[in-house]
Image (cartoon, rainbow over all chains, first blue to last red):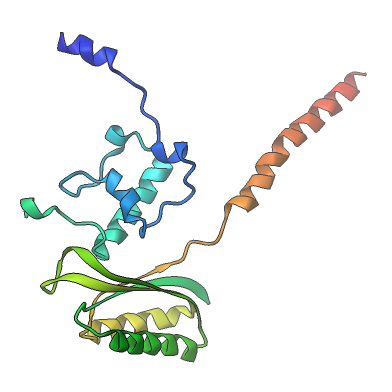
Amino acid sequence: MAREGESRSFRRKFCKLCFDKVDRIDYKDDRRLTRFITDRGKIVPRRISGTCARHQSQITEAVKRARILALLPFTSEQYR
Amino acid sequence: MKTYETTIIFDPGLEEARINEEVDRVSQGISQAAGEVIEVQRWGKRKLAYNIRKRRDGTYIHIKHKSPPELIGEMDRRFRLNESVLRHLTVLAVKESPRPAEEPVRAGEPAVAEAAHVASHEEKV
């Protein structure tokens, strides 16, 4: 039953950054980056977010830089 | 000479005059090393995503500059010695618009294909 429901709601993943025609994702753009981290502060893997390889590597670098500048958390407060 | 982006987080307790002083000192260091300050952005006081040295906020300054690579190490040393700097980060600035250089090539492709097509057609004739 549950499996049927899953297959029915299946939607092809696509890279949201390619869709928005983002050329370069910036570490200063923390509001955009929050969409690619979990509530624990982890970087969302490609298999979940559907991001393309090029944008994923840009996200990874940007998130890591943003963490150094305390724009994004290394880990969320409540799990510390 | 390379283009860099340096972001500095100052102690939120510092007055604006002190911050201006610090920014001037950095700019002076850049120009003394024959570099050039392109832009200084003041993001103002922001909440930090996590506490740094028990501070919840920080005053952010973002400087875009052209500097000799040797200066970056020296700058890093100075920031680390400076008690009022909570955090700093220097990265290479992204080169402006690498896209326009790519696109003419891509735009040129169909034309080349077309030319080839015409050529092969001519051969047949």
